[in-house]
Length: 342
Length: 83
Image (cartoon, rainbow over all chains, first blue to last red):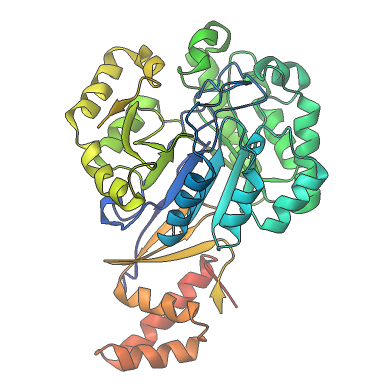
């Protein structure tokens, strides 16, 4: 029994959530994911609708951008029931902006009342005192707020239609209500100099975790790349600051970041798929957010079927070929929304 | 003794996983460790767990007790259980 804990590892890595832009890495379970009876983590983009139209949005979300075929009430609760039945230990709701979904609170309360651990990933614009109280009563595990900047100037430039004060006031409302807070930060050429003060702000707002990583060239970022792209020197300074801040806040707030580039990450995932499913607003299931491959459809297949297909789908030669092509042509990430069924 | 608030336990064919969702760490458990956590989930205290394991597993009782207590101490150190 001496090796009772066979291995410890990060389950979701530098998770910034599927709607946020840093190259999210949703790491592996300590057992290989193929050994597991079901995923450990499901990241569900509950809608593609959003009140904002951020320059860097991976999902190209925005006002009027809901998919025409998003899941209806019966489909949503059928999917949630399967997550509960399979004891998925960790679930996140993102978007788009999940809080604009008409069934958002019903979904939250369904999961939390069945002992689910739920994280909500939001732009923070609907965090009224009443909504925060309701999230606290439901018992969400955490709310992750995207705060890409420590000032109005940078935040509002990045988050078109967004308002820095509304997001920070909302985060304060979360803190007052006793909801655990995570902050997510996407670096760009015009906000990267604020990374240190953004971390300080996150702590002041009561966050227990701060997530960041590299901003991905996909979604809206393709069109806005000339405004967003960071130089290697800027990234070097960025990561230096993150290392320093990690030490400064050790024991008080976890500063979590992922230096690994997307290609390196995907090459690792090819042989060690994460125990993670990404669910799109219409029930399609992606292998990983940074690839265009679809391995299931929750409107037509059960979670068990899709999980059964997940490992095989990673072995499809088109997946490895896409990753190899990415090495030669990093701009290929601009085609992540042209789904490929495997 | 019980699992900490943010710790989830799920049994698997090989044993089980413990998932600490705040740190996003996963711990893989073998069958004996799984039995210990199952008893913790059932509300047993440390002494009861040791007795039950001795009944269940055919091994030297002193070894079972020593290793079960070491494992539980490890769970406490990692913040995975609370008294």
